[in-house]
Image 1 (cartoon, rainbow, N blue to C red):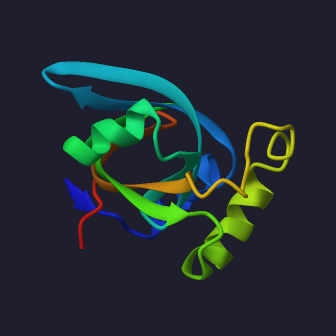
Image 2: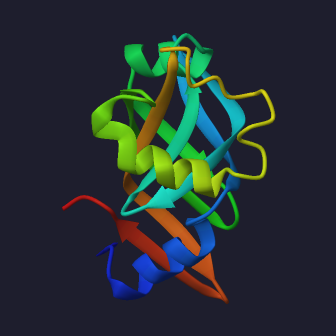
Length: 142
């Protein structure tokens, strides 16, 4: 397994640095739970806008271990609630997410006034990326 490097970083950003539909897995007790989410990749993490009281968020509060899968990429990560999307410390990231998710963001699905509208960060730990017949096993930890 190799550290995230210039090649794999560029591949990840090109493939996932925009709105993507990925599978996000969590656990509830001993049972895996999986759902499709819109996600945006940046610097070793996927970002998802969600509701703080959703199943995924309550499950991640109990056990922050997560897994993702999409477009010839699978990975493990740690789910982190970054808080309300309108918190001052989230302003720059929120702007990038609004841009990435512009196609559907204002269709009534996202309510930024609701303080339970939060940013979920899945900080990747390790993953496998396939690109044109090459398998990259990536260690995302510093």
